[in-house]
Length: 124
Image (cartoon, rainbow, N blue to C red):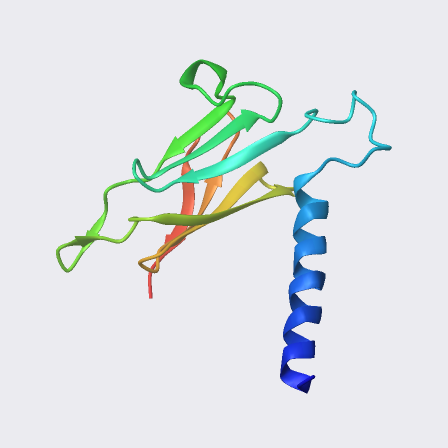
């Protein structure tokens, strides 16, 4: 047997096992913990960040929070196009904020409290 074939087989087995463990819920997880969290989604087609409950349908009626990126243009094109990442932080000054990035280089901090204001943004 060639060493390369052996390594390919080992990699496929290791990857398949890891992916299977992500797809199936743990047998020891209780029913109360499954779906008791929210899921944040970067909706690229509409330039929005959406938060939905994990256990319910992801519909507009069940959306817990959303933010739509501005349509700022730099040199003729929208720099908020293709929102690609969002992370959340609890800050002393503003409470909970969303840190977000877009594929065309824009980054920003959004107040997810009552105002949904864009607190800061930059572009390269």
